[in-house]
Length: 319
Ligand SMILES: NC(=O)c1ccc[n+]([C@@H]2O[C@H](COP(=O)([O-])OP(=O)(O)OC[C@H]3O[C@@H](n4cnc5c(N)ncnc54)[C@H](OP(=O)(O)O)[C@@H]3O)[C@@H](O)[C@H]2O)c1
Image 1: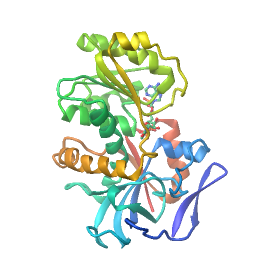
Image 2: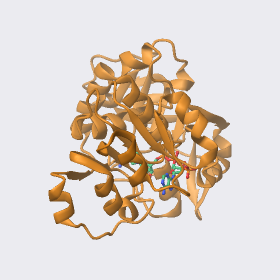
Image 3: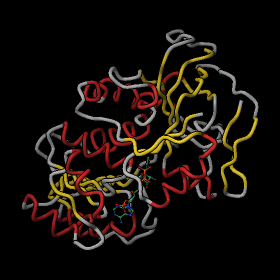
């Protein structure tokens, strides 16, 4: 098969051996793969694949099952699926544990469904499972225009949570259309003041992709009993935590990485997403936001686009 290989921090299409379906795995013939910020870090040499994962980039895909490994009884060749991967999505074929497969939501094309597994599992596991977002609680989404952000805004709205998002000015109208009640230009305005003014108390849940640079200000922007879920470190990894400031809010900070979680954890998250999130997708309350779809051979160009941050939502690659 052909797959994207990282050579000198560039993405090159090469002929490589086909993957095989191991115990509990299936092989998917990939129709489309999602591009994620983590793939850019992997290409740059900052984010090596976890042990046992494919060396090729790509954390999510959609396609058709072409082989079923030993021990898999509930999947069959020819089935259309989308999947959460630990790597290897930028390829014509990928092997994946059967527990990480999701059905293609009714009403979506196979290609569209490739935009969902990574963002749906990341946002659901952090915002709903860990930070317990509920109806009426305010959600602050940093990076509202990202793949993650465009999904989080819609999920928050669908759950009945008022949503505040940060983004550069050119993306505001689109984020309001997705359901954000307030969009803050983080380059000119103070998100702490704006979030507090929005509801008089601050955010009950904050989904943060910036990390160190925002830690202190996120606590300032937090409502009493609020939860901060840090999932990115675009603004650095080391910061000073003022425990007094956090205690006064009775707040909490969590931080997780989906890719490194054990397969059993991923399977639990995937099952919950299929049960709780897919019905919202099938009802049209949460839609994949796809900025562009490029051929796999143009993976380098897809990364350039992602690094420019000119995109809104997801970038997809098609073999
Ligand atoms: N921990 C996990 O399990 C996990 C899983 C998936 C993703 N992530 C993380 O989630 C983040 C988003 O991933 P993605 O693939 O959706 O990325 P993406 O589409 O490339 O989006 C990144 C966005 O960050 C925004 N941004 C940069 N600096 C910002 C700031 N100071 N304040 C607010 N927004 C800012 C940019 O938007 P503007 O144009 O508005 O600046 C850009 O669109 C990444 O950091 C990624 O590593 C973590």
